[in-house]
Image 1 (cartoon, rainbow, N blue to C red):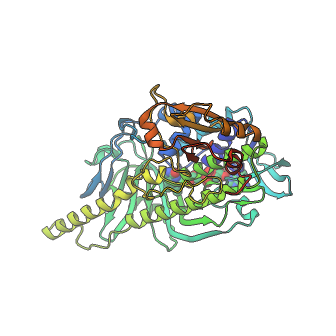
Image 2 (tube, helix red, strand yellow; image 1 turned 30 degrees about the vertical axis):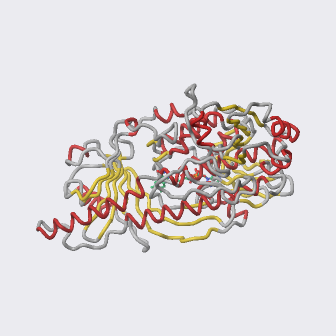
Length: 530
Ligand SMILES: Cc1cc2nc3c(=O)[nH]c(=O)nc-3n(C[C@H](O)[C@H](O)[C@H](O)COP(=O)(O)OP(=O)(O)OC[C@H]3O[C@@H](n4cnc5c(N)ncnc54)[C@H](O)[C@@H]3O)c2cc1C
């Protein structure tokens, strides 16, 4: 792995969890100077559950009773136009479709959790302050030239595969000759972290996660409670023209958003470019890309890292299968076939969210203390509140992604439920995330998945499943069997037999054993076409 951001750390951790030897190199020392992500999505939390790190996330210092409201306002001391109320993360129960809930855990808290998880795996070697300089590949290996940032010493690392988790400006992607497609500039945005321990006492809006500031010109900035204590991320959203701000301009903009003069300390200023890009493919021979190296999107929606961690979980078991010798020749190609459309889907939704946030047209009378001004504020607040719900309610986006054209999922001819970012429809249709339900003993169905393939039998015993289990054994494919007695779960999964992949997606389902069990095993391990 090249890159020790959240995606590289998740991939290293998952490979290690599977007992696969790997080396992660990261050019920095791993310190996060300005946290970017803070929404750990519900699917990512399901992976955290598999990895045993939910307690660490729940125990992170972000206060779990900190109200997660999103407020639309003219300034912290000015008119409030609308508000979507959310309780503190720890006060909201998981939705019925998952054993987990989304979490608020900013990158400076989440990356160290992933790092500790990866470092705890015996087969994972992590090397910080080591930078990839270049690499070449032959038919059976990759040779990477890396440089130690302390000593300047260079050495070669020889591996079977290389995965670029090296972010938006990925050297791995560039070396593999993979182009990005889309819109290179949506906005030139400036993020400022400032410290102000008493900000809450300076206004009457109460605790909230995000404040979106709307002026007569439209939406212009946001403030996010980055640690639920004394640090805040102020963003000047900007537009398609590049602009640099002086410190005085930044201070004036923060005071405009707060609506009064006050004391604060600027901790960091990071100008960045919001993009809408997806890689044309995810693989070139022995080289792969995951995370921001493969898709760069607007943070609106909180999909970036979460999409990248899904990439990592999709790729990890496939690399493990090749290294363990049971993966077929087509298995690694299925990674891009499955993940590239999901990157495209999420990048597009993130941009739609951005357009929604910027959808307020100029209203010169918005600040007027007149009946007309009040009427405008009422209309803007109502319409904007309705529009923004698309961004706040995204179970469908996080759980409803499916691998429709996958060459290693055997379609059963059933119709796909609508892919709606808001609504998630649980289904065990091949290609989808195998749905959650609680077993009688309190475990989630999701707790059964991960180590190898899992063949579920609903009203069926292991003897009836024997042909498929024997075929898997013959091909060296790890597959186990679990009989499920609960009728409500049988109704959810719909078929007598359901085969779930190591990443928790359904590979096949039917009411009877396949006529040719070896052929099915060959398809799901990427050794045969359907
Ligand atoms: C303001 C903001 C808010 C966001 N909020 C969210 C959110 O709430 N939820 C969410 O899911 N996403 C969010 N995102 C997106 C998220 O931060 C990214 O998608 C995520 O960090 C990508 O992770 P990554 O590991 O792919 O890449 P990165 O985090 O960019 O990590 C890449 C790593 O590779 C290293 N590297 C690069 N080149 C080399 C080299 N040659 N050798 C060695 N190491 C190298 C870098 O040092 C870096 O550590 C947000 C983004 C922004 C800007």
